[in-house]
Each structure stands twice: as C-alpha cells, then as structure tokens.
Length: 105
Image (spheres, one colour):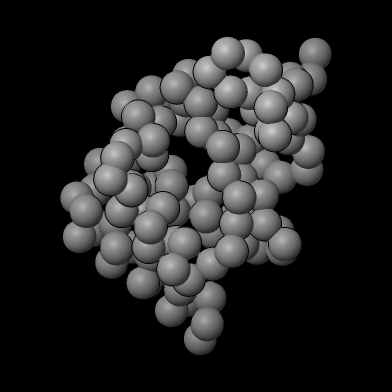
C-alpha cells in the first residue's frame, strides 16, 4: 500500500496546508526529527536555506518530505539532513559548505 502524506495543523485540519505532492519522503530517527523541528532554527536547515530553495515537512514520527524545483536539489537536501544527525552545529554548517562546493565546482 502506498502511503499518503498530508500536512495538517494542530487540530487535524488542512487549514492552508493539504496533500504533499511530488517531492521525496524518507524516514529518520525521532531524535533527528525533533532536532529539525527545534527552535531556534536547526543549523542544517538554516545553512541549506541560505544556499538553496526547497520545501520541507517534518513529522514527529521521523518522516521527512522534501521538494524542490530540481531532483538534484531534493537529493542534496535529503542527504545533508540524513548525514547531519550526529554532527555538531558547526559540523552541520561545514557539511553544507562542502556539499555546495562539490555541486558548484
């Protein structure tokens, strides 16, 4: 059975959200999901957001959905997130810089 993924507000209503179409969904640990949802902004998402344009939805159950205008951006963002789980804030920023250097040159 194919999973259906939708984004709702705290009351379970679609509000301005709705079905998440296209993109790529993957599983992470619940610890990584909580880190991605942390406040202030998660360092890996902040660093990626400075360099790339993408959409992301993170569930507390560890499911992450990523979408972007190009498949290569989706792959880059997904891989960076999966590799960031056990890295410090500084290491996450360095990871993004290295990934961007590989893509650009």
